[in-house]
Image: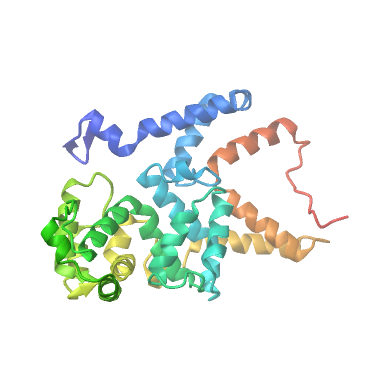
Amino acid sequence: MSRLGAIVPVEEYLAESHVLFYLSDAVSQLLEHKEEYTQFGLIRYFAEYFSSVKNSNHVLFREFNYIRATPHNRVSFIRVFWRCFRQIGKSGELLSMQEYRSLLQLLCPDFSMEVVQSTARIVLMDDATDCLMSFSDFIYAFQLQFYYQEFLESVLAIYQDLLAGKSPNTVFVPTSASVEQLPSVAVEENDKEEQQRDGVEACMLADCVDALCDRFKHSHPSRACVREILDQTDKVSYYSFLMSLAKHETINQTIGALPSKAELFFDPEMDQELDKLIAQISVSPGSNSSGSAVGGLKEVQRRASPRRNIHHRRKMEVESDGSTEETDSSEN
């Protein structure tokens, strides 16, 4: 198989593209809604399924295990979250951790609280996680945490070992002589608190992370970016290191889900959709403007869901009386 002139083994291509994963999911969805989709048409079903995967619309309203199953799914979900809720950042509104989780659950009902908590710790530098956060701070920290979750967990284990004075991935077995030389509990606790404030030697962490990248099987930030960040300081804490990674433009470009911070609230395609929606609301007679706006916004967001699209269009074809207009719930 050729890709950009280079010969890529079939097995390697299938592993990198996760084609078999998506094919398996497509078949599972087909079997789950067999009667519906066979009437809809198998060829059209598979065409729209893989078209939605290509266009990154396939993650809407899917379960958490699905949206995190592949790097493409993670990028797609980050992009969908940004496009759906960037207006919050545009208005300058600050939200709590729980409020951000509620937004995420609108797109993925069983979204993990652990991911949201870890994101809040990055933004707030492990301080009180009940503080309010701006959308721009949250979205870039969320991108880092969600896309590189396995890598960050490994880095945290290394950091904790360095903080404890141990070599990463080694086991410290105390001897009788070392036990006699242990400091008092109070002194040890004071030293530990001071170390946690100061962090660890940046050069040691850089060497350990570099070694981690050699054997790491999941996605990870480029070594050059990691070195660039850690070379700027003598000591570094875990969350300050993560916040620097989250703000690094090269890492943002590598992931490819979000625009630069200067263009975070600029999305012409979505703006056109919203303008059309507002125009429809303004000319709709006898409708409750606020209720229609909320319902319309949900329709704009749901429009991107490929699996739901197939299902809903099929139902419309079978059950519709010819009218595609929805009834405003606010009307008596």
